[in-house]
Length: 241
Image (cartoon, rainbow, N blue to C red; front, side, top):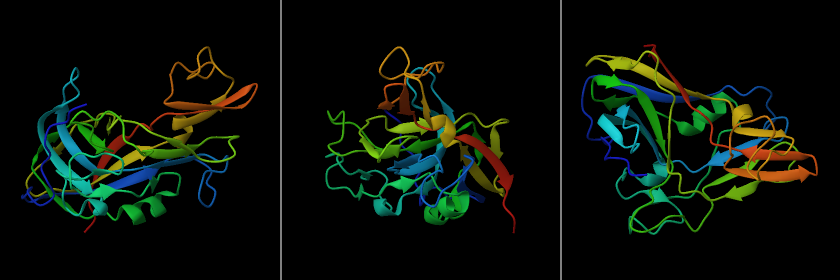
């Protein structure tokens, strides 16, 4: 997937500001994973707002504004990638996994998002960049995420060149004027991303669920745990002074 160039944190200069937050809407937490053993840890590069997304190519359409960049990227969005990719050559690499299976306050403490200057405009989606696959590379040489589902004895590595996730649409679209200051929240529910049930008709399916999951593990002859990337549901609110 080829996503067009982003407006960098330093390059976007305007009176509008956005602070990114994540919201874990999954019920029932344990100290590090969910009470049923669910875990999902991703390598994340950046998050940004997109005016629109081409439905065929999935490229950005119109204006983009970055709202968060992983500190391991050292302010270099063009050269940054996750560990395990050779390209872009010589750029910084993200080696840490970001743990989504924690309470919202802990997730945002690590995210450490700041009020970020963005270009005024109308944005319909938020997008999360998780890798860059180009220059002939299709898969990294290292896992891009770790996951565990109910009934699994331990986390399993997963390697993917699915380098980005587009949120559900803002409803209504996010309209930012020059002096606006907003908090954009991306909510997710891991109970929909990591699920367990009877095996379905194929090795990537659970009975009664229409999805073909990214990865599955049979935990017994009659039970299977499967993982898919979470849907991010965006919302926006005025930032409190």
